[in-house]
Image (cartoon, rainbow, N blue to C red; front, side):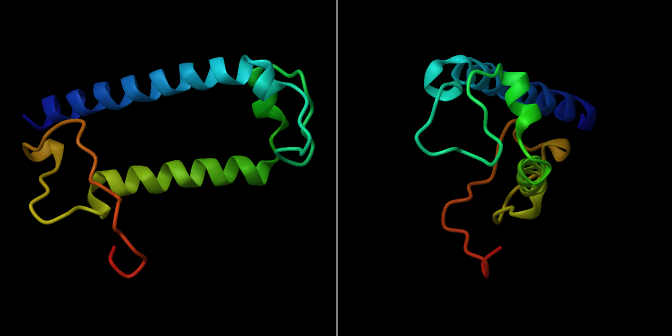
Length: 109
């Protein structure tokens, strides 16, 4: 039962990530994002790059910020910010459920 819950949750999560990545790739391919900017989005920005080249151009500190945020969201989704009555998906909870973040202050987590 736990394995089925894990696999269902993984399929839902990876499907959501794939859809968001596809939309992000499309957005980064447009001249609005990949073109010239009046104010540079980050140090070392170069216009006209493809999405993979844009990722390569982001400074290491920026990449670490993105990866850290993803790790924090993963930890929160695994129950770190679980409300009362939250049941983990491997223990019979709802696969694909993500606890709400709204209203969580620093002292409330």
